[in-house]
Amino acid sequence: MSRRFDAIVIGTGQAGPSLAGRLAGAGMTVAVIERHLVGGTCVNTGCMPTKTLVASAYAAHLARRGADFGVLTGDVRIDMAKVHARSQAISFNARTGTETWLGGMQRCTLIRGHARFETPHTVRVDDEVLEADRIFINVGGRAVIPDLPGVHDVPYFTNSSLLETAILPDHLVVVGGSYIGLEFAQIYRRFGARVTVVQRGNRLVGREDEEVSAAIQSFLEAEGIAVRTAAPCIRLARHPQGVAVGLDCSDGPPEVVGTHVLLAVGRRPNTDDLGLDNAGLATDRSGTIPVNDRLETSVPGIWALGDCNGHGGFTHTAYNDFEIVAANLLDGGDRKVSDRIPCYALFVDPPLGRVGMTEAAARAAGHRVLVGRRPMTRVGRAVEKDETAGLMKIVVDADTNAILGAAILGTGGDEAIHTVLDVMAAGGTAASLARTMHIHPTVAELVPTIAGELKP
Image (cartoon, rainbow, N blue to C red):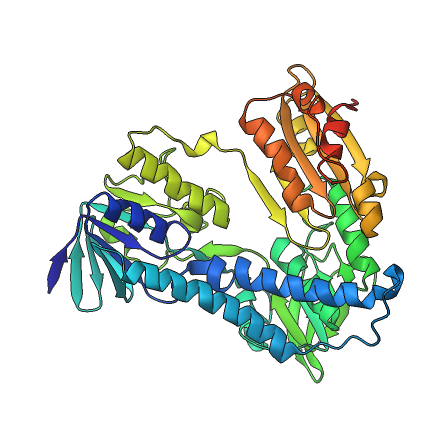
């Protein structure tokens, strides 16, 4: 059996459903294909459930600190079943909301099943063949299972499987000291687990400047999280108490034994089994589908959006992919991926908000830089909340006064960073930011201050 549509959208992450809505609203017939859970990573195994856990962990942490604020709370206990149920309910509500929206959309058909290309404009889903002149791939990604010795001989969690359980490990060993791993490490430490983070490199979150990495490690260790860096030869083996994680570190014991292990060493696009070769498409070594500045693949009429195109790997970059494609196709626009300013956050507590280039990256690119810094101990809002870990930093080109990037690691940093992002997007300079009046008392009020205190 064969059906023809004006457009086919494969996958229902952050780009797919919104794009289907715009295409259908423009009068096109659209088939949306989903083989697993509507909503993609963010709704089901990413942002929504994890940030729900972050919120529960923060509530536990603040309750334990009640006496610091003159609030006597008594013993704090964790009901993991309720924590888990809350996380799952929020994901379920978001997922069913998207399903209902797609199901009620005129000219849109939601099809359940595994899509595989048969030709550049033909897709098979089980026994049905679908045809369209425009096909949009939005298949998301999954956790990488690293090729570590013994990895297939032991039980382990990924971010997805850990979110499916209400278990509270006695000792969780997190393999991977970057964004996903550190969020889970702090969550489960605040829930009461012992936690060890094992990182192959010499420092945590290696893409950040060293002072940011050091500050993150400092406040995580202050909460009782053990950090083992410089472990280049990680290996796994069964142990009577769970899993032994072997290390090749210059300092510390040669192995750490945990009751449970979380693998958090990166993600890979879900492009392996789409039959891309039948469409004349190939992926690079990381599994991503190469695209141009307008998110078009090498095959006319096929686009790749979200995690599978290698241009961001975040919910907000996927949604921006949708905006770029929709504007160019339907609004006569000429939007490009290269026009957007990179930005993201690390949702440990306190969070890290990042935009543009790090200081190290700016120097490596040949810029003469000026830097403004302020520790959060000198931010009134942080002092009032007694949450003074972290720092604020802005990086500026010494010759043009253009803002190259910024990092705000501290309470409210994930929100305050947008003050810098918006000025950069508007083409403003550090001087214009420094002259801007912000509201007191906030974290963001210090952004103009550090922009006016630049030093070589």
